[in-house]
Length: 156
Image 1 (spheres, rainbow, N blue to C red):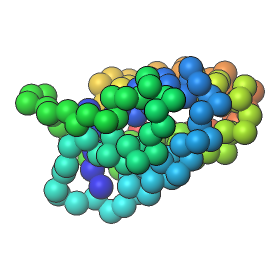
Image 2: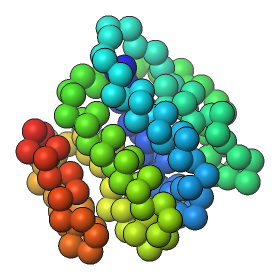
Image 3: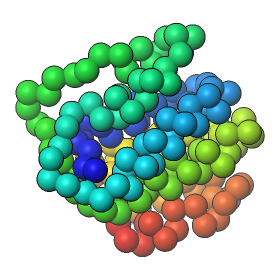
Image 4: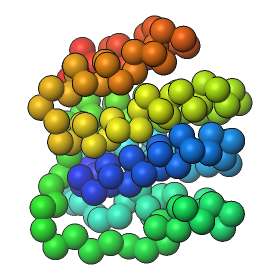
């Protein structure tokens, strides 16, 4: 299913949360799997708003007060656009899968979230996406996975 640009800002906020609290990542495994499933579902013309919030909301825990923005649907009156590039969804899914794979290693989770937290906004706002993302994930690749996002970035 398609997401809108504001969903990518929500993903960015989620990644920032996990960067600050990597120990909480494992409690949101099901939510991350649901986001992967959603982004890998065949695309349709109909687009809803607040998709990421709606997916994560059932998993929200009150101890994560910083995520309370999930509880409110936003109304987007202007500058809303649909993200249609398939490679963008592949990149987001690859990042989420890597988060799931690394959630038992706090150091790795932190570095991954630190390396990727701005990628959602880069994917929708920047011109030189590939170059910027390569720079952002360089240290993570060096320490944990040299192949991380390699195939996806070729398509960008």
